[in-house]
Image (cartoon, rainbow, N blue to C red):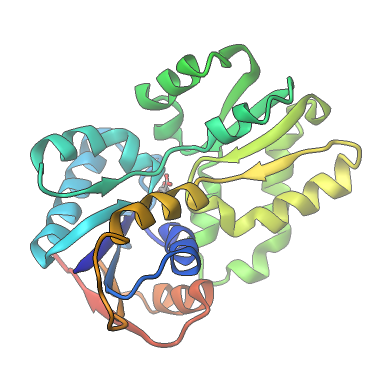
Length: 266
Ligand code: DGL
């Protein structure tokens, strides 16, 4: 059995990491990061859909099943069509953890940060509608965090990252919020920076930051627990362009050295 993971870049590694922690992953993992086309969130939707299709087909041709779409943008753009097209493949998608925040019933506002594409998709808007929390939710784009996350010098840019986060939070009265939902898989790489900014500037605000990785790992567990595998598989990191920076960041994020690197160059 091979398990596929897909994201525009490094963000999905935050999901893979949680799955490694929470699931008994003894199979080969293929993580495809579309290094050539990242970031997706600010690009033409038709172009992004086309490259997602190609990338998912690559994972299917490799024999991956299930496939975790560890990308909110790709999930909201294409998961329905992919499920329709590939009926034998199990697709596990990523959605902003709005329900987790809504279920906490704090009677306060919820801030959802995601990519520009995600915040305007019907999938997210109808989730907010279904939960009947439309009046209490703000959807805000934070695309620049994806660019920061992909930067090899990310660690040296904490000040810039926090200034950017601050510029977003400054437009809101944070005391009115109970949750910030990180609706892009790149954003949990900056959870500490979010808390740094909140603790520095909005000391009295009691805000929880949530993301969808925990839920995805539970969902994946439901699918793999029915298989009886014993050998420990290898984690293959596949890139769509040559990127030493991506390799270094992947090792750093997963905190692992034994990764196999490969390329899908067309
Ligand atoms: N990590 C992705 C997401 O969850 C995509 C970010 C991007 O490429 O803009 O939406």
